[in-house]
Length: 458
Figure (cartoon, rainbow, N blue to C red):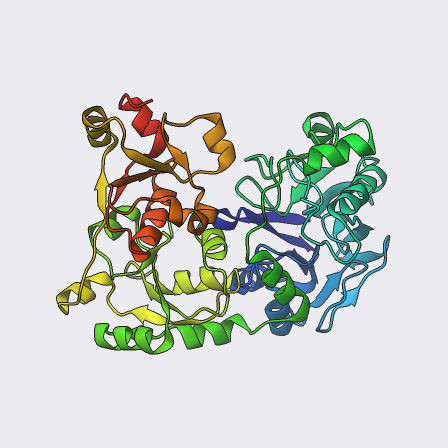
């Protein structure tokens, strides 16, 4: 028996490859499925099943493409009404995979169809659970994403409590927990950086599993939930109803556009120019009105949070050789309308003599000198409210990046605006948005809060 967690950091997402005696199953695959197909081919195995723990909201799953390419059966648990052919398993139903068995445990709460898959080894012993968004390491799934009709988040939280108590907690302590997400995902609020653990440890240390009553559990789980990213509902719909194959998206989107053609295409389609280079490269020169979301961070979730319309045409500026990766990472969260990329990258735009914009970016030491000379600088901290509440600069205003557009009327355009985050990734995104909205006097502070405090600013 082979179990491999295939973890994707930018989405904080774990897919799983399980193999036994020439048969394989994939749990919660990403949209680019070639990695799973190659892995099975190398092992001489046939992919028999694609198990989905629920309708994912934070990414577009690869179940349809994988089933089409391999002939594998898509399997959901109860209550999963799909717009395509899939097997809807009953609670307690089992599936043979080589010499092991996968058992369906219906665990509603995160969503109504949420299902945990229990892996029984060759001897029939409970070996591992693939919990999806029902149970994370250090947390449980948020119960506010599948509210419908009279169903409330309190109702779903109660269901989640029952699922955990009746289906998960009775399992042996040595069972391994394999969740769908880790720290950085918006599907929970207290997830560990660890991506697997024993169930016994989770019983002891996971705050949600230590609740002494259903009422305490509901209160603890609902406390502190932030607004779900705007793209979640649309991704869940795509996973439920179906979507275009990734191969078609890649073929349509992989258009290398020279500067003149790029400019014309942007003007004709109203495409958003998305520049995915590093913050430093972007600051030194970019196409006017471009938005910077760097590939070197949580790219896909920030695209989903800041570009509300999945049908928005997007024109890409990427580092050389990163064009295909960027298109794939956009497609992971359902952004399939890329019209092409700037052929040769930003250097060709400059060589063509096209208009270029810049953003002033200064070190923390330089910021400290300016703050000493002018104590009343306008400082915008674009971190999350919880981060800001834990520690922030005196006089700074918290304008979280997720909701930056809501604060634009509060920013004075005639004064320099100094923007920082925790490390510099989010602040450059914010500065690019502000610049595109007509705030020409923005200054990025490199290194974030820690560097600023190290420079002596408090």
